[in-house]
Length: 124
Length: 309
Image (tube, rainbow over all chains, first blue to last red; front, side, top):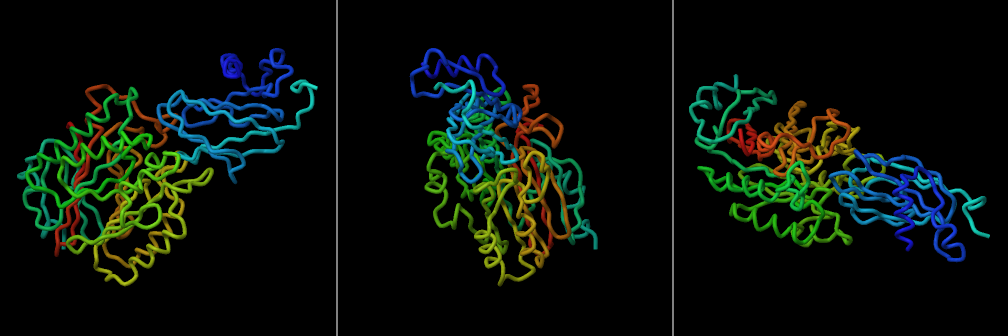
């Protein structure tokens, strides 16, 4: 069900963060928000994404060549190699600015900004 | 003294056109390159020095529209190598043997390439370190090598150096050799005579081809400072899936074609991804290279031979 919630967010072509399954999972301890980053033409799209803490970010590779994600200073876990249409998700729980790059093509870089989880994205 | 006096002259080249396929023959004399024209397989007939082959970027497992059958085109390339009238001394493979570092991909590459019955000296590409433990390449090809797989050897008086510039890549950066490998390189060439011909081979170009696409090695220039004293340095790379050459002083840089799929010229497309071309054009953009040293003539020739002319 978590997967379908994320898929729904992806189908919605979400840029930035969206609320997904907030009603369904109001009492659950799973992340309530999701954001999508596409990998197209050797670029992360969007290149910078700002989310609330607790958001699951999912990267999907739409290139005809594999890519792989690594955070500068290993601030979040390294992805497996993503072949065409493969995805990788990570839930950001700690506020901060996370720089990352493709470990296969390191000229590809991106940033995830994680803000404190205040406001509408959290459940009390 | 011109290269025509003691080397392969144009007429001889044309007389020896026995190969199928075309390439540009470069001769080097005193560090100055001369293109001798478009030609077929000219060198095999009268080479008395050392001839070896370069194969690159096999990408076993690649099956996307740019070439749904990368295994088939590698088989074609190896078939052409088997059919050569004169057997080369050995082959170098400049990396990206596999597409996703799967055991089955390395198995396919080994099965096909071994049919050439040539010794193959490998260096890895970034696609060969994608297994979770990054150990498959080293287990298979890394025997007797240092670090992530660098080494050197000698053949017919030529000193060959295989470098690894595809590990520990940094955000925003290019290919990377790293301090440990640079120190090893400095020590490896230190005692050698300046007249020793040097061949360096690595996956990503050691010179900066196009940084916007990551086509270069950030500490490549440092490596070249250790090779300054040598009269003949040839740097052979892959990675960019197209032929490119540059000469700087005594150093010749050359990249070979892939046997799997072509990539666009620098900046000619939105990204360096696999380039889809007309079906009948594909084999003109895939191929291998042949490199010949003629001893006592200070001459080197690189012939790029596509699968189809």
